Image 1 (tube, rainbow, N blue to C red):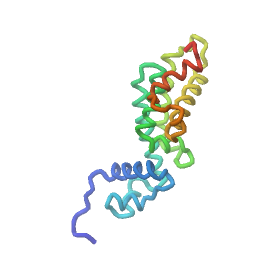
Image 2: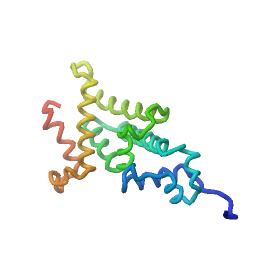
Image 3: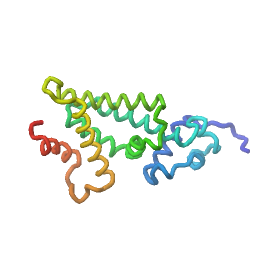
Image 4: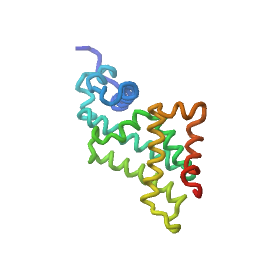
Length: 187
């Protein structure tokens, strides 16, 4: 036992940061609270005070990710910009992105998570509404599915390096901006 008093500062943030590093390199299956405690220099039980268990930690990461995504989408100028911001978020926060859309890893009913998901969904819906007003007969639900599918699919393929050969040296954000015009010339 050490004679120095326990003091870590923001242990919750330190554990989240360490977890994001592990997920970025090893995926969420490589995550262990015991390993994260070792990395943070605290007892193996300390992370459980903030997250209870691995599922709680992953749920907190997903909630944080949805909050960050909502903030990114809220700044979108239009529908194309929302798609670009979605992909940029995935590129800048790949560990969050991976966990956010893995419901089998999360506590679906967690209040922080459901609130953050609602915020990111509302931000996407708002971006769609600015481009496809309901008066033109566009089904807002189908528009949201189409936009989300395009941006999410592109981001997932990009993060998995599946587009490397197709993109070459092209900026992925510029390619994404052009996709709706290819698929929907009237947009």
